[in-house]
Image 1 (cartoon, helix red, strand yellow):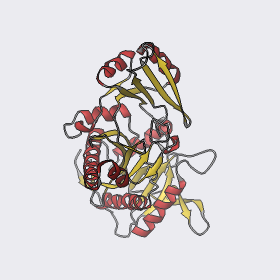
Image 2 (spheres, one colour):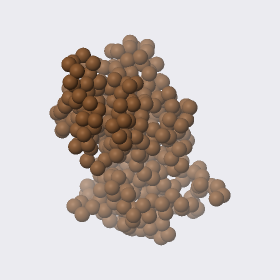
Image 3 (tube, one colour):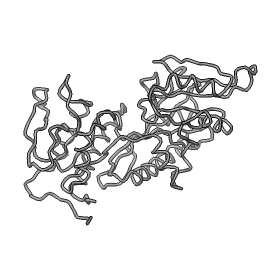
Length: 378
């Protein structure tokens, strides 16, 4: 297909961004409505007409379609005829919904269309991400030893090299379903391995004499989910609690990847993950890193983390073959100050840090305007 420029056809035409989501039986539509309102408000300020449209009402060929605008005076949503969008921002909140045939049809139509730009067309799959990142020499140094979990042998093999492993659902969200395996060296011979898993905010431990025994226990709790098994990284700690860095990487008003901000998430008291819904808490990364490494090195680590995040984001976009505009990323810093990649999310949650939050909204709007004015269609 030829590449052609894409600009507004008509000088009076106003640039438009549609936030794409799905209909809901209980309320107007699915998704984080506060987030949508913030985007609409930011769009108003920066000269972009933003509205919400559901996959059932989306129509690529019509010059107008039914969408939803927010009435700031009345503080409520109203259904409205809206102009056809130039850019579509996929905020369908769940994988299950995104995979429905009729939703996929809309997404694929946008991907093929030369009249709209769709960015972030799908959720990421954990295993696929690791395959992508392992295959490029720039990103490989940041990737922990990772395999698909298909048999007890996969655990045995990795335990030969690493004393701690993590078992993670391939399509996980917010740390749900993650388990930890440790080789125990000092106790009596009967218990060689410990499996830890989280139920709500409390930890459950089981001891096992063989990997097969541990495998059976894992099988009882895995549900129908596919898993990966991954080398455990010895993360740096603050007050005896592990933490990782949560980076937001977005395209700028010039269309380049750039880090909008880095926060830190500290693990809950006995938690195996740093996710806030699992008891984790938010903290300041430079405070935590200074405590472990001193102020100079902390600065240097954050600089390297930013650079790693951009390298990883570029590789993910390149391998995905789709247009991406943003992602959040979990990065770990080990006790020797190496930076490790744990996961990336194509639909970042709201960052609670006010300055990151403000920048994240502006970047989505400015990147959309960039696509309208300079974007190239595939």
